[in-house]
Amino acid sequence: LWARTQGLAAELGRARADAERLAEELKAARDECRRRKKLVAALQLMLQANANHYHKCQFCDKAFMNYAYLQSHVERRHQEVTEGERQKKRRVEKLEDELEGLRDQLKHTQGDLQNEREAQALLSQKEQEAHRERERGVREWQERERKAVHGEVQRTREDLQREISVLSEQNVALELTPYLWVFSHVQRVQELGKSRTEDDMAKQNNSLMALKEQLHKQITTCNTKMQSLQNKHEREKSQMQRDLDSLHDSLSNDQKAMSTQLSELRRLVKERDALIREQKRKIQGLSSTRVEKITSEPQIESEEEEEEEEEEEAEEEVNEQESFISQQKDCPGLLRELRASLQNALDEKLEGMGVRQGARGISQQVLLSSLSVLRAQRSQATSRHARLPTIRRRLKRQLEQRVQQ
Image 1 (cartoon, rainbow, N blue to C red):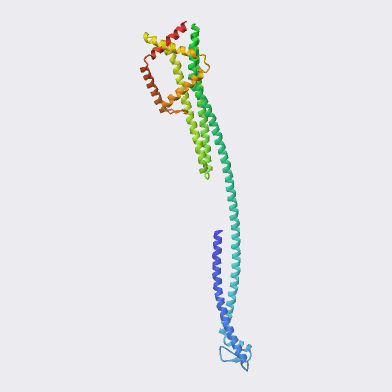
Image 2 (cartoon, one colour; image 1 turned 45 degrees about the horizontal axis):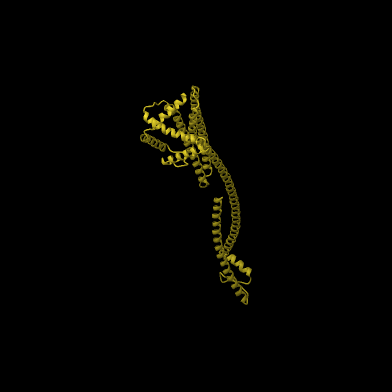
């Protein structure tokens, strides 16, 4: 279409140039005709002014009474002049015909150009309308995709919050389990004073074994749940990654608007990974702590008494502690106060070791450094309190005596 328009424009330019040339030739011919007409009119006036009314030839000295004779004379004697006039007249007529044809051709070309312009304007209008329709469709699709992604992000956020709350409750329960076990063990030790048969010792051993098995089952169950959560998380993560990749490819025009939501979703996924790893680390640490506490009881029972004098001093301290416990035994808020005090002491100790209150987990490096600090503190406490092993042996002996009775 553009090439055709260019060709028509070039043809129109050539036609205009020919028309200008023919107009100049026509103007020159008209000027010549006008000059000759004036000359003929002057001769006619001269002939009319003469008394004889003769017609003189302008090319020679002859004169005629009738103009027809003069015309015949000119055609016969001055044929070259008349032939030139005829040729000039024919040329002028031809030029006028060509000029008229060029004018018609120019009008036809202008009509074609006008039709082409109208067709091009109509086509451009249709293309603009189609482009606007496509843009409207793209905007609607982008809005639907944005709402879908927002809903998916909201649902994922709610799922993560629910899982975090469940894991937090499980973590709190696991953190309180060692304290509850200590309280139950103390209660069982107090009840041992009332039981004096070997069957009760067997029951105690059976209960310890059952507790170990239950702990093992809980650890296995927690590991299974953790593995299932990790698998589910990996599937969800891969699915989210595929969805994010597809959305990233399709929403190139909305990349800036969607980048914030994508980064938020990736941050939630990373937080979920970190939370799962921290919960798994806490479960493993708590399980190992409980096993150490359970296995430490037989080791305490297997120690022997060596120093009698230190045992007597330790016995006095133990008696004082037992009297205090017996006085506070009937207090209904003892367990609650003891739990609160233990929790506060644990929080203060953790803050002293660099773990802030409310933290959901610690890194492996912080864990190793904290364990080394705890070992050093235990060794220092043992060195400062030399009667600590004696107190342990004294408690062990009293427990054996109560069991034998």
